[in-house]
Image: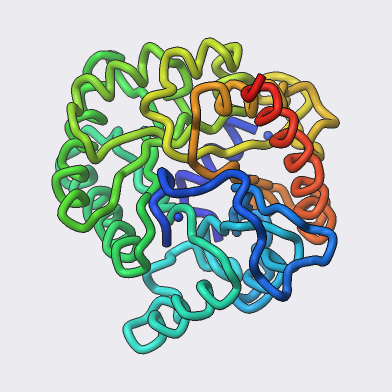
Length: 318
């Protein structure tokens, strides 16, 4: 079931083990089980938020069969508490890591629902403790990133920004020795570049960076992709991409390239700055059961995104 935060954001908003710097965008596919037609592999992935009914084996098998190179962990078979999933238990985690490697995949990010905005000290500490559990899991899996939220701006905006920045700095101090970087997602009330820039300035941590949800900064934030990347590009380590029709609370997700979000332009903006992370598909099937099934949406994304990336790399090389 979704967390309270996820329910609120659903209603209010829309109702790798390699470090990303080592990802080679045009690495040749080497898996003998990859589709015969896939001669090149691209840094594309999907979040398990899009396949809440799938078990661990199906997630890995489907990713390999459809030429994805990464999987973003946001629950397994509907269980969003990743550190409590059987696949990542002490007795099972080494086998899971081997299965990931055997499928020729990387885990791009381990996603928590931890929110950094809480002003109540006890609630804030509870959120930090939850985030640390996900940082520990990322470290054990050899994954470079853990996602958290800023979430809500309650009270004066400058105080909310300061609280989020302070919380991120604490998490960065914890995550750094574990070779993990904490990513705040552009999400909720934190979808504007000036606000996020101020957070990074105040956090002042090499272990804090950005997960750019490009849909949110465009639809809720009203920012052109080129502007967002010009402002935040040096902080972007991971990316969520998805298309939609409508604005703000009325936005409805659609298959990639069929909506109003300039996804291709977002990809080009990243390629132009030499972005080396993954282009991860966040198909929010867990929160929107009426969306197309992942068996349809995921292969469609892989095909469309491969075309976008080929064009982006060709444009950059000119």
